[in-house]
Amino acid sequence: MSNICVFCGSSSGTDPAFRAAAVELGAAIAASDHGLVYGGGDVGLMGIVADAVLDAGAEVTGVITEQLLALEVGHVNLTNLEVLPDMHARKARMAELSDGVVVLPGGFGTYEEAFEVLTWNQLGIVAAPIVFLDVDVNGQSFFASLFDFIDGAVAAGFMKPEHGDLAQRATDPIEAVAIAAGPAPSFTRKWVG
Image 1 (cartoon, helix red, strand yellow):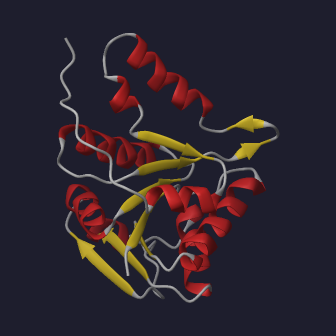
Image 2: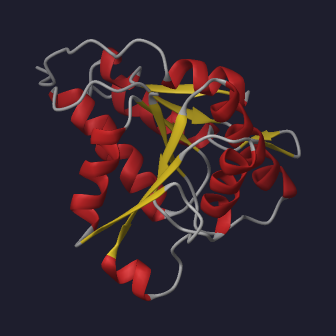
């Protein structure tokens, strides 16, 4: 069984659409015969997506740090829970266990994880599709400003268009899983100019 990694918030957000997207994504991962790899928490969108995968009968591997486990935010009902010493080891292990990544809304930690994988793809360290599941909140695209930011960096010559395209976007959980489980991106040398 191959695994899809999900980066998402340890909070649930203020709109029910965020929680609904996490449930739908978890169900889509399980329905596509994939397992879930994620940050190991039982709180926020993290706990919601893990529970949805487990409820659908698929395997869930959590990768958590000793510090976070000590704060009692670890999910105790997972198929497998790996405890690592620090955040760097945690991210590397999640990437090692996964074939692709889906990003749901979250805070600094979520975006730091996503940009780390994008950077690793850009440098040829990993080759993993990464897709942002864009949640519609009251007619507004949650990730619109993020993609505007990426497009601006490409337009200003700070990254190649191929690298901007590493960050893919989906509006449907089934589409997001298909992209994350799809072909790995090809490597293009990073340096511009």
